[in-house]
Length: 379
Image: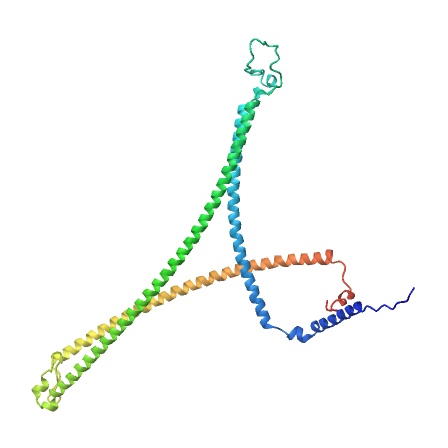
């Protein structure tokens, strides 16, 4: 034998060393307080939250689709069950009719025992007279109604096949009807969307026309107001000119001063010739004052009535608010009582469960060595 020096395979040692290095790196990441506590990636968390919301939305949409599919399947199952029950009912009816026609008691072999020999062996046999009763043409137990039974079976099979074909055709028509209804619903939705869009466009057009008309009306109103102001300014300027022409300063005439420049000017008083008011003027002033006093009294009375009505309204509102607050307080008290009873019941149940855990389930208390075995590695 020759002694051969084989190369040492360091694959196992390298694998162990790699695992040790990976474990050390993992421990440095996990047991580092800065990376564990402070190192918080808000962008990644926001992205995770957005992905979670999108996933929840997709799940909701999928659940809605599943619910709609489940409702459709339930309707189809109910329809098929009703059709199956109807088919079974028809089959049972045909079976009862067949039994009543071809399986009557007097047709059985023991009809002479069960039916008191009424109709027993009462068969119309086509036996020639030349053969006689001992010619052995008919034997006991022979199936004389075989042809009728086979014909009835064939008819029953054909009837079942027709029923199956009818059921298949009904199911096909039902699927076709559902597809047509779905297409019709989609077309209606498209038409409704188009109609709503057209209505929206029409509303926007009407709104634009109304805005244009309103702006035009405002422009015309502004132009008319400016025209009235301009005419009023011209009239005031002309009145001032006429007043200056007919004033005492220019005319130095009492008659011109007393004469009104235009209708509605009123009585003009010459201060250098005035000797006091007349009785008619004083009476007119008193009448005007009395009229103003009555109007002020009416206004004060109306104001008192309004204040009284507002006081009554505020009183009624205060009463209503007080009644509402009382009802809410009563409802809150009842809710608190109900919550207290529920919490007491939960506390009792929790206490019973804790007693069950402490006294029956967890009877063996863990030792200190059980807790010290954790958090010793990164795994």
